[in-house]
Length: 538
Image 1 (cartoon, rainbow, N blue to C red):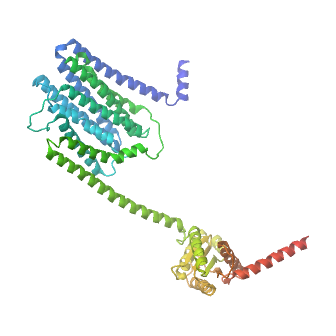
Image 2 (cartoon, helix red, strand yellow):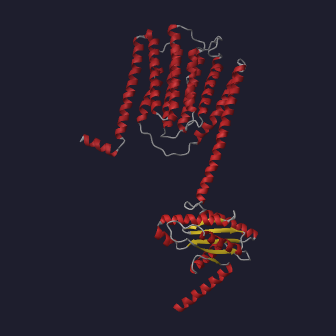
Image 3 (cartoon, one colour):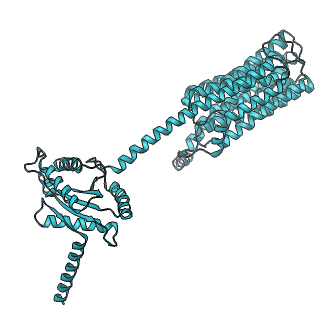
């Protein structure tokens, strides 16, 4: 019964097996972390006089495990995320270097504390790669050069901030100014808090269910653990000189990172559809270069009194990087705008051209007809319309096939378009085998001449190889002269269509002209005949 219940559970909940694997893996990795932390505490308790070497060994091993985990994640991640994981690896390696220097100074060199030293520089600088990860674009850098801009500016910011805080130039021969330990601890705690707060903002701004969101969840957990546990450890050392078994607190942030990075991958994050980025994320991306430049200028103002040349050089570099970024973005924006305009023109052409014949389609005709109608009415100029229909096209299509019918449409469209002559005239495919020609500022006589020229040009074309006869067309012509009539656009189309019907009725392969007055008279007579027919039926 137990086995059947488990099977039913897995059937009803497909993610149950995956959740079980996740819990098992989380428990295993967390168990290893607890064992290592317990071993650290036990060894410090058992050998209190050797607690410093023991603790440094565990500090370094915990950091190395975090480095290895970052390398694994970088190898598995997409190219857009690999750079972030590698930056985190660089931050951990800087922290590892600082710890090695601190261990050497304390255990072997017995250097007195109280002044800024090289290990303090690396501890402080280990936050710069993490800051670059937090400030990176969610969609990756649009220009690879910008990544190097950001990296150089972040490195300069860390260097100048170190100078402002510790009052000494790193890697210089100048004598270090003694620095109270309390101040050093509060500086490192402030750095950890700022990074954790910025990472939290980034988690809230990143779309859920994405690789970036997972990365920043892991990073945020590590940074808050680093702020809480490392700050507690530093203050304990400040108060009691030797924390003893509580040295284990400094290991906790690295194990929090390693456990989360190794197990959170197995958890199925909710999938999300592609959607516009959040306003907060867009603001972070666009404000980042400005904020970084202003921060550099502000920090340089703090060190200008004692390091004037350095301050001037950094301010110049800040403006140089910002100017280069703006120039590159402006050129890319202009290029993108030009490409968008070309793409828009291509789309407009595709939307207004008939896909088979290449001449304007019904949509293009409607737009142009409305424009020409309004202009003709405003100026009182003539406007003529030709309705052209291929004779016996259905029989041709049925007898010779659709490919021959398509070739016929293409040849007729090409011939008619070339025969129009004027640039202002428009030939469009109206539908099926029917074409329409719009002739602005053309009177009735001119419209008849154009219609006859269309037929003449078509008769002179070489027949399509599959066809045994020459293709002919019937043309209905009408002209709007604006002699006091109250007309609308549909009237012109309707009269031209009636003229085309007359051409078909009178034998095809001919031109028929129908004026508005003749059309109105014909319509009245047809209405009278219809009325008489209805009376006879009654």
